[in-house]
Length: 302
Image (cartoon, rainbow, N blue to C red):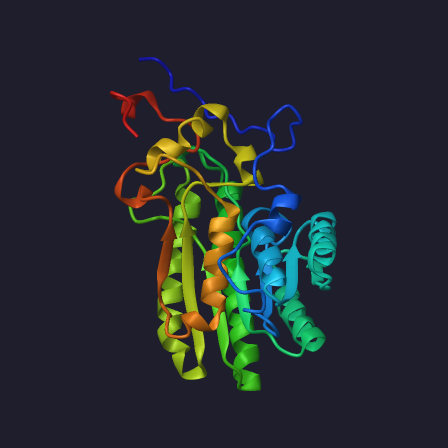
């Protein structure tokens, strides 16, 4: 029997690989369906705000009048997003480099955002990460790293925000960026497990925290073209769009506008929901982030 082809993890910083995602210029001027003052006076916290969907959500929120607070692991990326927001809107952001795996750092960050802006209205848990690999080959360290960031880190942000809102007797709003896990996620079992945990944690908290006037919802993106595509091999990227019936990739703006909706007064009666943004992938095909194994590659199957 022929040995299985190993899945190679590309270096996302390899300069020979094409960059993906929206440009800064596009983010600053891309048309939006929302009025310019939709989030005026609203304070929104976004984790993983230095790139990808978090960056797009931050810039759109600022363009809609929100006070924006960002955290992430790279201070350089956070500074770049802050400068872009300043140039596009004149607004100042609050940024802090940290890992959401550290509950003490999360607690301090949210307290300082509250002190800086006077309140927090929405927390967007966008930070996360994974790598493509067959589950049988996961190292213990790799498994724990993905679970700790995607599940535990999200929980620390949720719990600390809820404690602040309860203490101050203020309403709150949590938006968790997860994934489409209904049919499983081959070659990404670690993040599938973590994201499924966040989805059902969110549904539970939407009920438990309703007396505190805290809404909790999830957004499950499908194939969204961002800088994060850098971790996937070209053979996988070439067919990502074939796994949905629209045969296309989404972009970070698709998710940013969904976040703006859930942060807005229009979503005041929405809680415990999972909004899927995937071009119909949930009912059509499977993404193989490490490349489709020959066993499943029959007749151009998606």
